[in-house]
Amino acid sequence: MPTLYLTCGLPGSGKTSLAKIIEYEASALRLTGDDWMHKLYPGISTPEAETGPCRDRVESLQWQIALRAIRLQCNVVVDWGVWSRVERDTCRQEARAAGARVVLCFLDVPFDELWDRVSRRNAELPVGTFDISRADLLRWSKLFEPPTAEELALYDR
Figure 1 (spheres, helix red, strand yellow):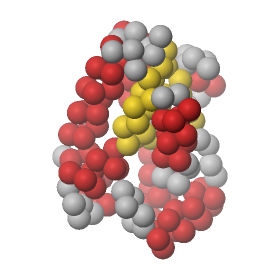
Figure 2 (cartoon, rainbow, N blue to C red):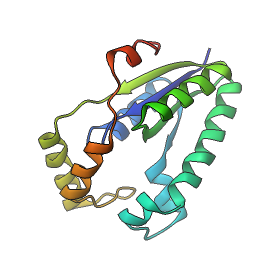
Figure 3 (cartoon, helix red, strand yellow):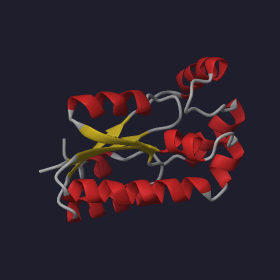
């Protein structure tokens, strides 16, 4: 049975690093939204990536590919952050309907550590990453819906 791994957390929590480990250890197809955003829309800014139509297009296409890969019995790791309960529920339900077990990889990192990591990454700005301000990170931390213990119990381990 294939497995869908969902990385869940804010920027700087280690989602992409974990997704890369899962990619190799579980022989999984890794779908990282930010990587595709930078490849498909060179020079896209952080505000454009957040509020424009590009992210929805990329994630919709990646989700179609994820479901197809699951039906082909491939493991998949989706590296988006899945910030809302509704998004996580939808991914879990659709992946299970396609025949996958679903593992939620929740990376819970305190805000000060997130900002430390993001500010270090901003200084280097590796390919495939966005420059993130402290104000953006703070705003996003207020929008993020961490999984509850009840929700986590709905996932395979």
